[in-house]
Image (tube, rainbow, N blue to C red; front, side):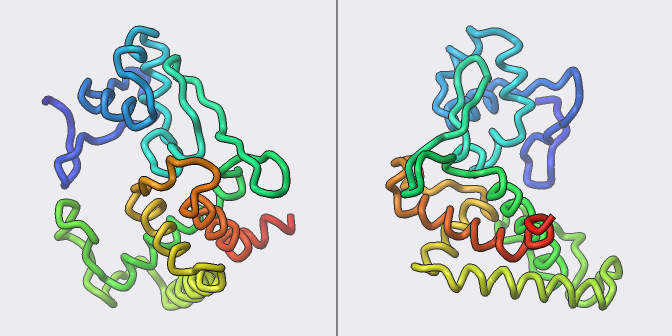
Amino acid sequence: MNVEREASGRAQRVYGATSFQMPEAALAQRAASLGIDPIDLIREGSDAVAKICRDEDAGTALGRIAWRYRPDGSRDRRMGDFGRGVEPWITEEMEAAAESYRTLWIRWYRMVGLPRRHPQGMSFDRSPKGTDSSESPANVDAVVSRMDAADNALMSCKFSRLVIATIDSVLIDNVAPEALILGERSAALAALRNGLNALASVLLRGKRAA
């Protein structure tokens, strides 16, 4: 009970702290979400628990889709055959595109002055639309331009509605749809991969050239 909490009431995460400990209920919930029996994880010992606690990817929907976790805290990328031979479900480039899009989306969302999407996470100290002095007009134009490019890339995908809905769920709401756990033949996984590849083509263009 005696932990720092966010505005939503959720226990604050602490990164990089050597003495970091996750509350037992939160640890059990994370283990279960990763397909690990909490008792098996605890039985492995403190090193395994520490790995799961400190693994930032384990706390995200995309991380749970990309990685398969073991009770000892280790992980392996989920691999599948998507028509070009065996490859990761989610590649490093897809992860980079996801992080780039998430960062861009948050900047855009704050910039236009919209409230938080979920009432329990509502922040009452946000800046109203047009009054955020942290963004210059040039930055606003750049963010809007990149957001438009990202949106157009997603719209150009086959089955674009499913692609956009899946990207929105996994990257923004941090929720993995049930269909994504069905395996590499899942339509939702195909939509997620297509969306991430489309985002990579516009958001990582400079990095790809390098």
